[in-house]
Image 1 (cartoon, rainbow, N blue to C red):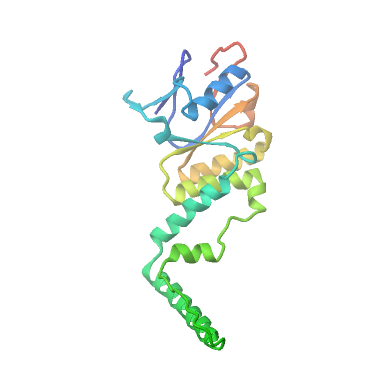
Image 2: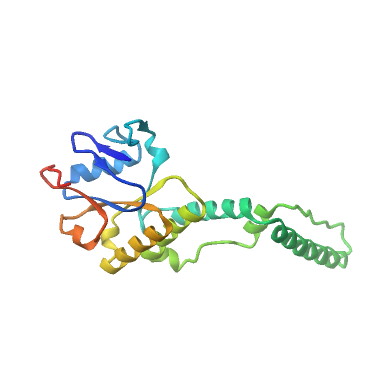
Length: 222
C-alpha cells in the first residue's frame, strides 16, 4: 500500500506492524492530522497498483490516547455489536431463559402490590446488555498503553478493516512499551500508524517500526 503526502516522497508500506510518521515541522504535523481527518487533499492512499483508495476506508484517526473524547464509548459500541452478532445460540438461549426467570419473579412480586402492574419482556439482547451496564474498565481507559492495546485487540477480534492512526504516543509510552506493542501487532497481524511531533532520534525508540521522517525544513528522511 502507498501513502502520499503532497510534494513529498511516497511512503510504501506492507500490511502488518508499526508504522511511524514523525516530523518537527508544525506545518507537516497539521497537514497530516487534517489530512487523515479528510479535511484537506494533501494526504492520499493508493493500492500497490496505484489505484486510489478512499482514505476513510483505509485509515481511522483516533487521535490522542487520553485527550480524544468518546473513545471508550466508540469502542464499547463496536465490542457490543460484535458480541451480539457472534454469540452462539446455546449461550443466547441460556441468557434469555435466565432473564425470563427474573421477569417471572418480578411479576410475581408485583402481584403482591394489588395494582395493575405489568412487565414488558423482550427477547432483545442489546437492551439486556445495556441494562446490565456493560462498560470498559475505567482504570484501563486512563492508561495510554492499555487503551492502545485495547484498540489493537478490538480491531483484530472484531475484524475491523481500517488501520488505526494514533497521535502523540511518544508522550505516553517508553521504549519497552513500544516493543510490546510491536510484538502484539506481529502476533495479531495488525497494522498501526503513529503520527508524532518529535525528532529523528525517535526512530531508535520504536525499534523495527517502519519510520518516515520529515524535518523542520520539510526535507524527507526515508
